[in-house]
Length: 128
Image: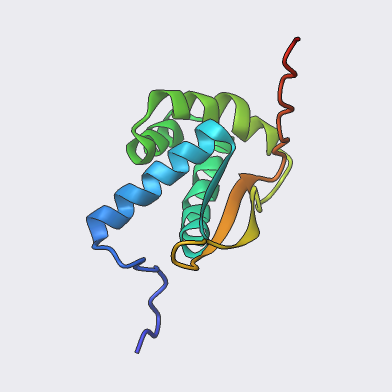
């Protein structure tokens, strides 16, 4: 029985699962949205929201805690300078999960994890 067990194992051992989630959070910070399975998106959302909360605090200790998790200077800078200040007046719920349907190969449910204020960039038109 799985009573009181809050983490999803995602079919991986602990070190692989943690590394995968860290990489997904870094990709979310850098790109603004990621496409993954629903279970992975739900698990990555927990950690992404914790990183935004650290970014909102903005002190040196929270910056060091965030770097210990992210291990990426570019993502850390973007988190503290661009992403966290946008959510300064918001108390939570910084991300959204949009369900996209099932993947063709294995019929796994696919979802899009993105920031609440994400705007889809318009593609530049080709000059002819």
